[in-house]
Length: 522
Image (cartoon, rainbow, N blue to C red; front, side, top):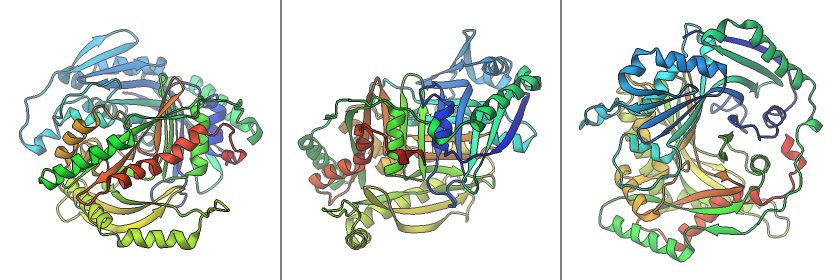
């Protein structure tokens, strides 16, 4: 498929949050996304990305994928899909003019674990779309990008779990055609517009789009970026599982551990709170809880935002793959009078975390699980633990984090790697499949995006993803914030329930805060 790229740089002092606010009507524009980082200079991220327009929406549920053309670029991509032998070979396609409905033809049930990694599933659509928009221009391929999110339930594409009613898609991705990329090394931005199919030759049209974005940003200042009215939402918090019921579920999980069914399981519950302005809430969260992965996606029918401390899986241009297991959590130490961090007490809590036998056992279990996941997909001898049990501090909690690395085998791409590792052990437990079965039995509800991943995938097969935690899904002004706790043999039910409260607190506070702080502009 023909793809063209036009770009232009400009000096810019606006933050990614401000840029996105200016160009997306303060987050109200559907099918837009902001992916930003608060850790400039680390190896985790170098750039923040604002997706201002998308050519195509790709949404999957069960065995069906719907491709919705969002503009003329999207229509040309649909034409290319209809003309693709690979798509027609693996999927039944219904042409609905402005959309296509693809149904997996299915492949023979694979008994071998490695063979199952290559089964034809709805995730295969993303692989084929990535290849469809790939050209010989490696630099252009960097911005030929799919942006979106996998739900926790996408794992059912290749694992059998107890049935549960689902009211949300398995994934939703976009092929972006207007982007602003900002570097954290200097104050500049790169505007990128894409043309697909016949639009690729229309350089005049692409140039006009580029100039429009350039002029808006050039004429914008900090004072122009945000205008939020005061809101008075209901500040009450509703729980889908009360404390006493959660205690019981923890005890039941401990009994399964004693019986030898599992070593650990992550149980979660949902906190619901009014959230009249999701983009404002995201602004509050990014200020109070800056994290390696921060994201806001407007799907049209709902918004997803969060500040996640944890990478799901990362694949770079050199085909190196990384996992970052997090396990072991303590709250931060706040001074009761000033409300500021008491650094002496905070350090003591950190030391207690490092020395805690239960937390160490849980953490090492998940490091081993990450190593086992990578063993299926990396070259022999390349798997290594780069970093072990480093404590990283966030606004309300501190975590132990490790880093595991390998080099992908020649026949493994990034999405196959994600299949092999999903869902991440820090959100399931171990052994993973059995833990996920118990989660289904205990939680009685599909998790949706909680425990899934926000992802970027470009045509060079570079992949980055964040586990969806410390996040909210907002529908009709109500935010659902899911938080979990890892249950092991020595777990104390009350402490595990409190851990879910501590993990949810930053997001709840962000939703309940009515007036945006001016510092959020930074």
